[in-house]
Image 1 (cartoon, rainbow, N blue to C red):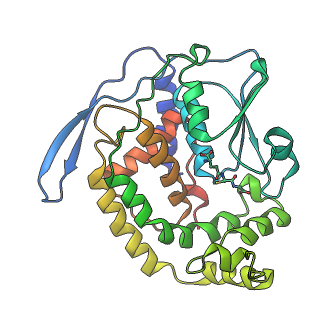
Image 2: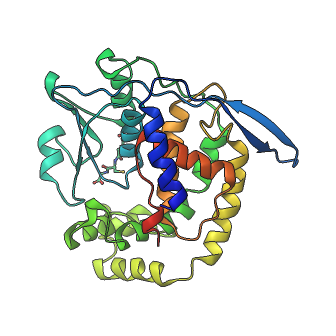
Length: 299
Ligand SMILES: N[C@@H](CCC(=O)N[C@@H](CS)C(=O)NCC(=O)O)C(=O)O
């Protein structure tokens, strides 16, 4: 994280623990036509810290956007929880909890309740008064523009993010070689499709040496052309954001839970040029949800 981002992370965390509403800020919005308008957006005000006698527990992979959804929602609701980072090749822990290898998994020990499915977990937490004000996260707006933007950028992001997740050597799920290899084995790099990479009923898939070589080549190649593309796509997204505090008009919603959780992974890519509003959005929700970004370890 840059120094300014670290400071805003600390300051916002501090402000969020108070009771006074945070003064509204105005953010300049430059439309596609280049006209500048001003949007008043009142930031989300966090409730008091919630510390249950037995802390709820979330099993996650750090890079997993579905896991980040849950971490962000718990952070926004100011619910203290235990984070258990699963190694990427740990089959036993999730299988013992829910019968298969999946993350996130959420556990409420006081209820002996174990859940999976990020959106179900968030719905449970936001409807249970033990976890603060209920319905504090607005429903998804149903808007299509951000969803189709996300879909259209999936291949580009896979190409840039997947090799970096394992190459940093810093993500908790990839601390050992077995776990890095487990990820590479199962996660194809474009232009390969999953059946070609992993195999299916008709073919055995690619051998591991070939997969390792492709991941290594992806890290060795010049990212400049892909970055240029990504930077242009971020400018488009910046234009779709309602404000630097939430993406859709009306307040913080499941739109943000999904969007921010996916955008967080982009911060592992070095050299990205973030448009101003979008960068502020990344930093504001990181501070509000107490989920760090990757900027300092970007490759
Ligand atoms: N619909 C699920 C999706 C969860 C999911 O696909 N998680 C991925 C990690 S990003 C996973 O655990 N995949 C199995 C694996 O990695 O072995 C949710 O929203 O919670």
